[in-house]
Amino acid sequence: MSWFESLILGLVQGLTEFLPISSSAHLRLTAAFAGWHDPGAAFTAITQIGTETAVLIYFRKDIANILSAWFRSLTDKSMRSDHDAQMGWLVIVGSIPIGVLGITLKDQIEGPFRDLRLIATTLIVMGLVLGFADRLAARDEVGGKHRAIRERKNLKDLSVKDGLIFGICQAMALIPGVSRSGATISGGLLMGYTRESAARYSFLLAIPAVLASGAYELKDAGEGHVSWGPTIFATIVAFVVGYAVIAWFMKFITTKSFMPFVYYRVALGIALFVLVGTDTLSPHAGESGD
Image (cartoon, rainbow, N blue to C red; front, side, top):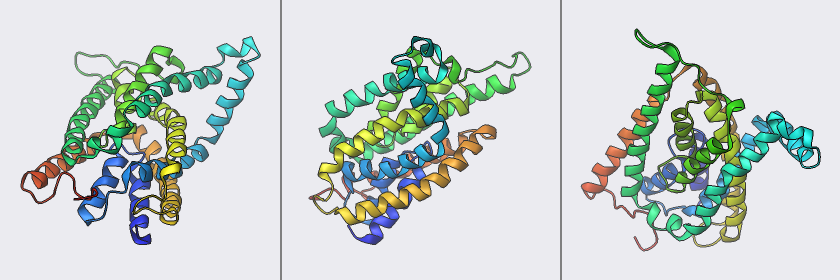
């Protein structure tokens, strides 16, 4: 991998990680369209450490409060009813599905799941799910002629059951094209949470999963055509761009809907099917031996 490739892929990772459009799919597609080798699951996981570092900094106060309360709750029973302490446990519970499936499906994640036809399918299907969930949220927020405005849940209403459902949604993002934020936010909206609450928990829930995945894949960095230098450079670029994107996105969702992302996902998925169907692009473009 050249330094130019790592720059572009780092930019793509930073721009797409927090938006509900799938960063792993865009890294895969960027390489395929440019005629580069697929950067692979290890490169993707490691560069996500950069964007996740942006989450740690952006939500540093929330994270510090959660960690402090959670550790104190281990020895102080009175702290176990504290919201921040409960959030610590809920993040742990929500991280279980992706941890189990990530290890179980490792070979599929690095192989069959990177087929461009599957990515096109997940882009469209999950885009439609996000659109449906967003419309439900909008209907509750504005009401209607025969419907009263319905108050949506926030993170203080988060239960173990809901946390586990969020976690299952996050685990779906092991398939490129699903989108970690898109799946968890959709799940949250369908369960009746506000856009901001669903997004905030989505980002907090991603921290242990992404950091653990990146650390696990460190052993494979530098193998094949991807070397350590470009990987670290792409991770730094992803951090800088990712921080700017998350700050913008958290403001965006307080007043705007997710429909622009829905239209983009569906259009990209259809375009990808057309390119593969007309043999303009191989479904395995960029893979070794292609």
